[in-house]
Length: 348
Ligand SMILES: Nc1nc2c(ncn2[C@@H]2O[C@H](COP(=O)(O)OP(=O)(O)O)[C@@H](O)[C@H]2O)c(=O)[nH]1
Ligand SMILES: [Mg+2]
Image 1 (cartoon, rainbow, N blue to C red):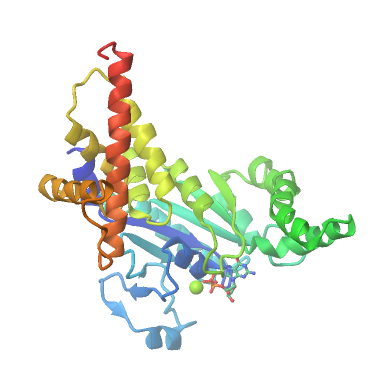
Image 2 (cartoon, rainbow, N blue to C red):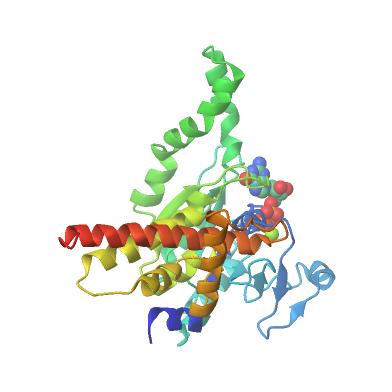
């Protein structure tokens, strides 16, 4: 089975998001999927759960970790929401642990958890790790599943630094600009991270972490979350599935297409056609898994637009425009890399 068949077989990328109620989980999922819509929730039998039923059953076991949370706009991602993973709660911890163990044993990779996001909100006074967090990072065997810690509501730490910068004589504008960078720098040298990665109490530290501020705002950037998560995936097919399914960071798709595909093709001795170069690089992009005939049609349309012989139709859909841009990028970069290969091999 080649990578694209395998990708098709896995189908959806499955993420478990853990964190206490109000940690900012739903907001992150919305930013990640670039939507303000509420997600749809399905039970393990695949039946849609009515919101009103879920609301009424809250606290009566209705918040099942096995439920699948999906956003209509990007059904390529399926989330399991631990909901209310409260400090010290023994039964919630066991529930999460059992769920991870059970999913890890699934023979089919499509049913396994592909990544865990563990949310730690920063909006509490003198934030230190709770018993639940210490327990999770000491006793929960996540096997080969990468774990990324999300320090959520990171903007809660901004006020003190903003005031300090203003006191130093900086204008509001300068203080506002410097604050996020300064806070992240102070945090990276602070006691929380030392504890998380270097404490004897933490036997299973996470793979990495990311600081997320203002995720309740529509234009918030979750690029760092996407990049860190992609970087932790060791399985190339899963990595390709993750990068090509997320639709908010095309820059990352380009980075992987160039670094993983084009660079590899240039380095190899293999003679590969122009069309295949484009087809193989397109595996890293969303919305572009087209067959050859469709791709050729798109390419001729794009060429007509680029050469000015046909205006880009005002009515053309956003998806057509994105596809066009991706194909244009692939066409240009494939040409450049082929030229580079010919130059390096002395054929030019
Ligand atoms: N200041 C701040 N508030 C946030 C952020 N993310 C979420 N919130 C707010 O925190 C509350 C809980 O967020 P929600 O995403 O529903 O948390 P969940 O219970 O973990 O799903 C909401 O009122 C959000 O608007 C953030 O990054 N910064
Ligand atoms: Mg929620």
